[in-house]
Image (cartoon, rainbow, N blue to C red; front, top):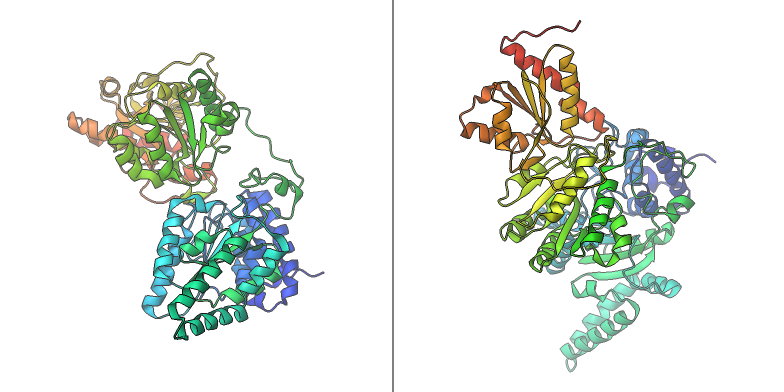
Length: 634
């Protein structure tokens, strides 16, 4: 049988097919997703689960005129392929290839850039308001899934949409949590009736007729309204959406593509905000993804044979070291609690949860709440450890300042995925945390040079009670260093010299300490004596150590895997200026003032000059500029 997918270059080609052929296209899309994600890695489960929804949306609606807004983007791989990017799909998440998320600069079909959850309804409502202001005529559809309704911004948008009463369709793709009871065939039948044009016309006519009867008037309408609410309460538990101003339909089978097409055709012209609740299976179509949807959510490269995963480094991951260490410390101290925003497994807290289930709080995709919730715990003597990806803690910036730092509450923040994370790109890079944390009064900020130092830093933050404290570490595996069995606290604000030298000083933080060490080795081969300092702390800085290593007036290079603007290097500069140092002999290396696109971490570090070779060359250039001579390599 010839592949139908190869003939689809745009949604217009999809519309040329018979409805009955969409199931074949769905199978072909799943095969394509599995084939290419096996080579590139990516978010497998959600996109497999949203295939029929994707096809039905593009079959019924007229994109790109009609605006389809995806929440996050984990579900959008099929969307990319049927909107003209099938031939490019093999470049997914590769440098200079397709983004792993919808991206406005990539395609006119990607109406809004996404990566962090719960934003689609707000963006779609803005588009609907713009449409009405400009007198345009198009549909706006938000596809929400992956637990996005646990995010407060989603409910803020729903509340506002109910008041504005704009024509807007929200599709709730329920693939994880149960939002209402499934009543099977009867429920589908009721949905089919209540979403049909005939039913809605009759409902409107009866409503109008009752209002025209002189003796009944408003009483009849109130009675009819009570009857409607009573019936809805019996058959549709999600009456909350209707109370918020939405017309609710569902739940329906999100894998029955023909029924989805029929339902979309029925509801697309209904006035006001509509919420259509669909149920899908995350990882639909393959046994190993259906049976373990969590594992299949975000995957590395793999073969189509389940479990055939490339060998990993023998060194432990930073995440696993964190999980084991905080769990062990929690065993010794019952006041230690851990907080996660819907990611216990990906942040190592699944280990903590198994050992201390009553002290692990998963608040959902609600980072703002997580931070203030931790503040409440801290007021009562509990030791909360808020564990969130660096990029996602940005969502709680006001809470960090107002609810925690202003009150100087001892809340511990652990930021996983600090720095460049690679293939997920700019929505997921943790490149701003050192800047936005160091500017907050009362905040202590640190980052380890390796996995052994990480466990000592975890010990340090648990013991610290003088105010808020933050620890960030990178994605991936450690360096394979020796792991101390006995943990100790690190003195707050104290760094260490890890390599002596007099010609140039690399003053580094976090992962850049090892990079600086390797740069120093390269320089040594060229007769240049480089000192390497592990700052450990971004705030407070070790001023005494800075003075010590600059006593012989060497050139100074700061190194961080964070934006240079306002980051670690800026903090060093501020101190040097205040003390009258000659800052012309300083270079700040880090991430430039731009958003870094997706690609492997190594490729991205090479591009921005954060490799040992590039850092060594910076040192050579500085010294040559100062007319210093160095001994060439033999």
